[in-house]
Image (cartoon, rainbow, N blue to C red; front, side, top):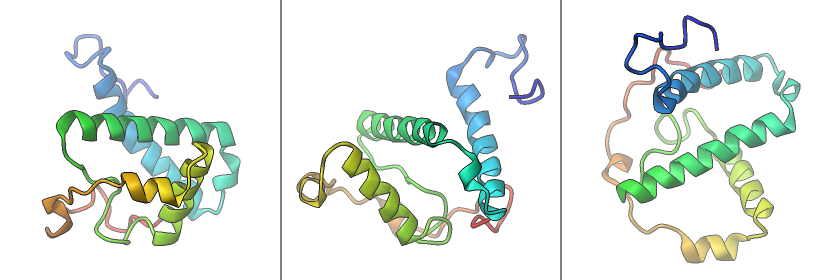
Length: 132
């Protein structure tokens, strides 16, 4: 993180992990889009991707369970940012890593659809072409 991305010591958000992650999330998203657009996702190590995925899964589950709701899991509306193939590839590998299969997933699946599924999509942050 560059010094311009990090809150200053006088900033009340200094040393606040949530504020740090908020800033880093945009940086990770922008850098990931650049690697994907250039066909260079392979430059990122398996461990780095696993860290990002693990953090995202754990944060999402803690937020969903703690707030008793299902926040949007991906940017965009429907498949404009993440394709069904991308989503199913990632979900399948998470299940496989935990030695689970579609049966366990089907039995446990949340049954509380949220209103956001029916709403108009929110504008995407900073740019409109999120597939890059």
